[in-house]
Image (cartoon, rainbow, N blue to C red):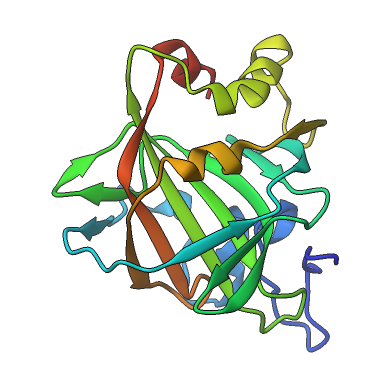
Length: 211
């Protein structure tokens, strides 16, 4: 299964995605009334203060990633699509994961140090459903061992924009074991289903500084 979107749809309209020239930095091209993210001095964050428990099933988590540097964000597109997420019986395939510093969401008015997003999609069709599982990280004494493969690459040779390195890891498998409950809400047209962990994982200062 190939989940990358083309730059343009057949009708010439912008085809949003999560990679390269279809990624978040270019979503403003979807509509002339949208503004570039860099045009905002401050952006509004979603406040999470009410939990809706949803059963999420993550399967087949052993897979390879391509670590990329995309305009200041370290992203890791999946090189195969063995990892799946089931939501209400429907299967979503892992597309990629990436990290935001600080967090894009708040819990009870508080920003977290970092937020990881695991992006899933039902198919490569332009009308496919998208689900994102967000996981919070905050400062702790110890490293998060499941992030070590990515941190090692970043520390060994910082990636320039457009560069990539292939790695093999199963970060989701162990990280998601630590996620017990999630917030759930309906997002934008680009990401209909948001699931954000109520559980906050620890990351060391040295690991955080790598991002």
